[in-house]
Amino acid sequence: MHKIVLAITGASGSIYARLLIEKLLTIKQQWQDVAVVMTDNAKQVWETELGNNDYTQYPIQFYSKNDFNAPFASGSGRYNTMIIAPCSMGTLGRIAGGISSDLISRAADVVLKERRKLICLVRDTPYNLIHIRNMETVTLAGGIICPATPSFYSRPTTIEEVVATVTDRVLDLAGLDISTYRWGNEPK
Image (cartoon, rainbow, N blue to C red; front, side, top):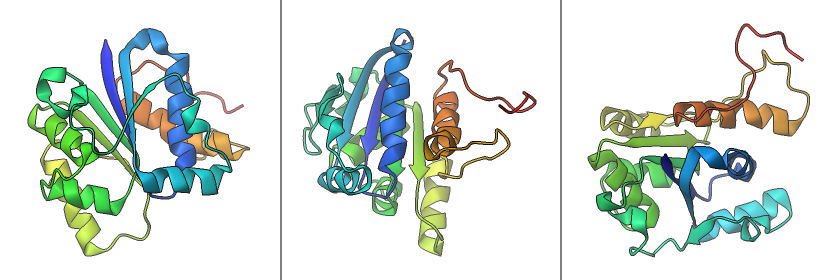
């Protein structure tokens, strides 16, 4: 069973986090625990972009960004997957530098040292050389960099469908069995 940490940073793209949470809730039988840690900036961006604070309504355990007693702050907690969505370049830089100054960077450090799965849904564009080198460092450490780059071969027609081409890819990378468009299928 999967034990998943979902970290939400202050990068633009709260809709990615929202759709990930909602999709995870539809496949509860595939995970034992989903824990969410959200930065203050992430809450502000969510409210700005989505016009609500619905993140407070989900039946999932939320942890504060400084709660180092969270079970996933240690390898003994045995969380096997961490998804950072959206992942700000500041967060990526702290992870690449091994700076565990908050619960997100500490949990990412734990996941990498335990050789478990870290998926960073990076959301900035364009990338500067520092971003690229930080992505390289995290990749070399075992993390997966998944840019928030949608696909269009499924012919999405709504913002949610476009975003789902990315979030479904993230859930595939996490090893979850989801129903989604697959290359070679007939678009809707």
